[in-house]
Image (cartoon, rainbow, N blue to C red; front, side):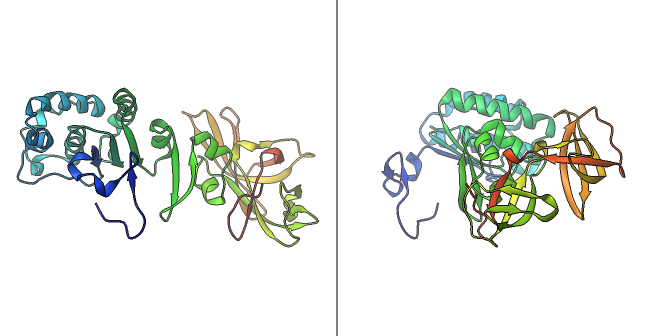
Length: 303
């Protein structure tokens, strides 16, 4: 849509500028609808095919999109955008994107305006159809569940910069930066500040732990511990903390404890059946073998 200021963009090993816009095989759906106000939905969906004398293919494409959205959108085809709800406009936008000879789909939170009960089904059907039709999909979302449901590969962006890419499990368990570690994972990772002393991380009341890589003494370092890597233990073995809240996650089958320890809030994941109330004292032990260390200045992972 815009010309690059510097460098070149290659599409299937060919400079993008060398390919006519209509021949690129790219479909786009954004959260904001791209509909022609004075066109009924059928004309919007079939425009690409009509230009190529293939209007007879429109019903098949409408049927394909109906599988994705979980709704028969044929009833929307004779209506104008002004008479459609937000979710209905989005379904027509998706139909418009699929009514092309596709090689690449660019989706920017296309299901944000769909009814909640259709959203999960839409993700599953979209994943299946992408595999069935062998189309590459670039899908922008802030929803981790959506990313996990659809993606084979996830790219984490920060202010337009690629921070890390890979499978969700790899990014979650082996992040390259503090940003990625904090961005991925529900509940959010716990982070604690400390300094390097005698080659070890020294977190004062948190104790000391060996660093995986060398850093000069005095270097400020964050350690990250995910809630599932902190366990409750006997009084003699752990650090005392006061329960602030106990939040059940029924679908995921765990109980999240938010606790206070020396004016710091921790998140601890325990079994769903455990009984804990605000004000209770619990004792915590960290699994240092699962700890992640990050340079406090750059945010880079210390390995």
